[in-house]
Image 1 (cartoon, rainbow, N blue to C red):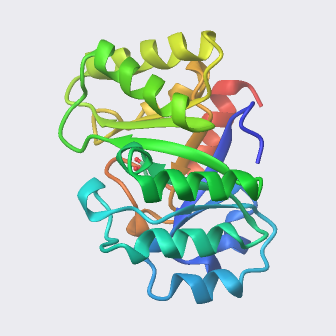
Image 2 (cartoon, rainbow, N blue to C red; image 1 turned 60 degrees about the vertical axis):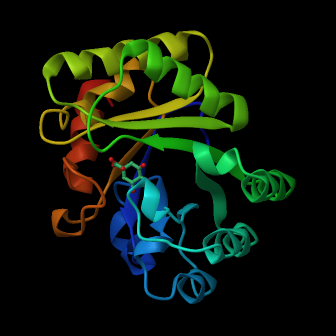
Length: 224
Ligand SMILES: O=C1C[C@@](O)(C(=O)O)C[C@@H](O)[C@@H]1O
């Protein structure tokens, strides 16, 4: 997975989506926490797209509970198609989280450190701090916030642009209806990963576009 330029991830609980996603996606984000038997699905995976394995904790808006969540991610890290894992920044502050990140790096698997705010958009200063914290501990810093106003979206663009100009690798998202357009626009300010479900009925976060739509919008705006 190349994090120097923008990649579009199809976000899904079903790796069977991969063949239909290939036309528009560069990566699969496998939401293990939303899948029934994620490790079996992953061992059967023989798709072309590389995988980001995410096993999102309940306390960060996902459905995974218990310590087994990190064990499952560790197993996923050993699968050859898995190029990256997504770990909440809070998890990276724990000993098992740090240990898993090290295991990933030893297997040449990138670590994405993420922070989600499902309520609001923190101040620019706080967003910068959070993202810097993420990039200090991982290869990519990811921040998904909830925009309540257009100016929240502008704040996110500004922080994304600033950190990108400083050479940090970040992925940023303004969730929710007000922030929806940011998903198409923020790559222009430096965000390196976008997320979309194959079909809107399977959205993994508020305010997403479906994959084909986001792909088309991003391509148009980037002049591809
Ligand atoms: O963190 C993200 C971004 C996301 O929350 C979004 O808003 O598209 C979707 C999640 O699946 C992914 O892990």
